[in-house]
Length: 319
Image 1 (cartoon, rainbow, N blue to C red):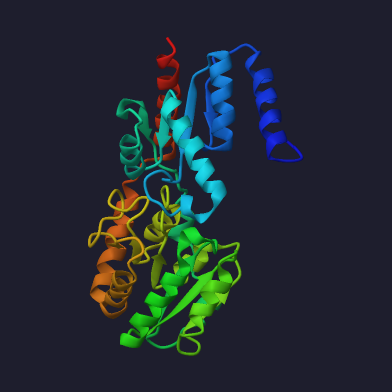
Image 2 (tube, rainbow, N blue to C red; image 1 turned 90 degrees about the vertical axis):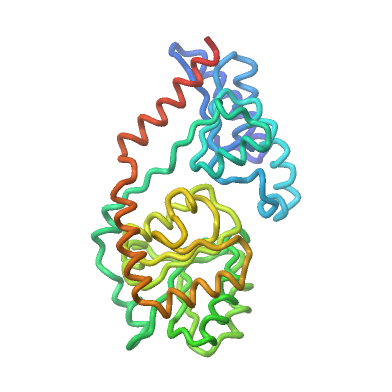
């Protein structure tokens, strides 16, 4: 909206929406989140009688991690909870989010599950990043994460868990690729590691090549809506260790095509990493099963049709 601040943005978005809704057509208001944009969408829906579709990508409402990150998030939580309960349809990107929405009071019949589509061919066919591979030597394994360095990702826990597994005897190196406000915290934890065992690198424009260079991929998040990077890891054939967030238990099944541990459980994360690092047969099994899993995922066309179903369900609620 090119607004000067948050309040101006809300007002301008509302006014733009009103102008659009005056033009001819069969309208549905779709909002990308249930917070600021969700509030504007609700006002537009209420004042014009237009059906409202709310997207829920982050699983914000049941677990405490996100809303405890700031006072603003606590306010947004209250707004978002109100908006999802008022929406005609809520699109959840995972069954985990659907189940959360039911718990907080959204009627199950108003929730449509449609995952985030991921273009997988580039990750299936990419060539490994040779500079990244050069960071390890001999039988040493490259453990990779690609992430924004924010509280959500819980990178300090990842670093501590890695150090524990390393000292137990796992021959590996952890490479954290990305940047953000939590980088200093992660670096402080990394100073406790044996020299050279943990490396930080800036973001790459070729994440598919970085993924192909890895022997193990790790995700330690406190919450995710879907966790697209985990699907990309499966496509690249990289054995995966992740916390029980997003697509875990829906696409990534513990012991089948990945390892899944409880959120914020440092010991379990460390033990999972040690298992992967010391069991080549397990890594090969998870790699093969992961690639089989992504080969059966919905096509782009199927994802589009699921989204269209959500829009049509919105229209039906107003008829």
